[in-house]
Length: 337
Image (cartoon, rainbow, N blue to C red; front, side, top):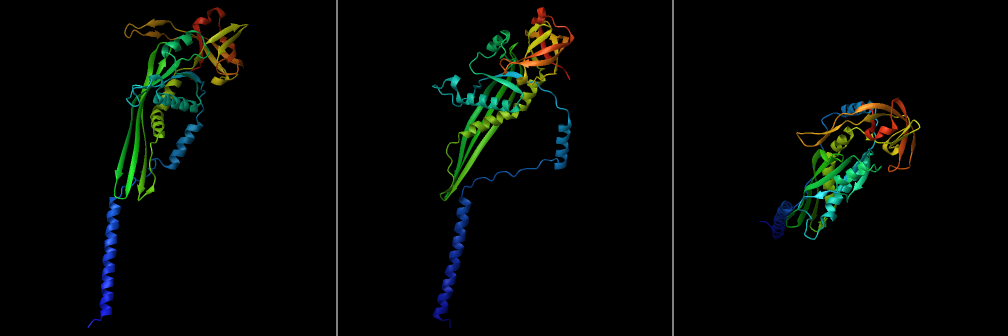
């Protein structure tokens, strides 16, 4: 016959087992009910091997560098065509999203170190640039960059459970960039870029992070959308041959606009071109400049000025002839490859 002590121990063991099973089940239930932060995706390796990537980089670096003269460009303020932030009391000219987008574009262009950039936030777009160019201002540019925010939106998603919660903030932006020839007012390039940014936070049993409104997501999404098209934009700008004007011809020397800030160096050789006749197309109604003719070659002998607004170069004529009386129909450009 089993003693009372033995029965008591057996009952204690049985109760302990039941309590352990119950605790395990409760823990599993709570864990399954928790809202957890999603695990970020694992990085995916490039399909090319490290050796192939290094060989490709070496081949690119071994190519002779092309001399690039800095173009003078103007960046206008972006317009916000989306419904975001377009309240009745908001002045369209003071739209923070549009200003933020133009600032980001200027910063990204400056990082390329290939352009001299002028801000034109308050000009009447193409018309004012045309007046600057015709007036012979050294600060005049031949290309104006215009932009629009065509889509912009924020979304906040959350999950809540018994002891946990998560919050996901997501921003999506779409921009349109256009390059305008200020001489004709014609848009010669346009592209759209889309970018997204997000942040996620989670809290379990009172521990973790609580996400407030993240204003940096706006900048990140706009920056990502501009980054998507910036390389193509730079390529289009540099496909247009660099050119400048002749200031004066005195004592056999030719004075031109542009100096060290634009990448000109003593010894550089440039072409003098007589502008082709401008005719109006019957098909499009737009003015078309016929191909020009080379009349001389110049070599930079010295430079003057102290910044991009007043610098210039002194050139000697290597071949051909440049008449002081006829410089109105001439311009200077880089030599073709």
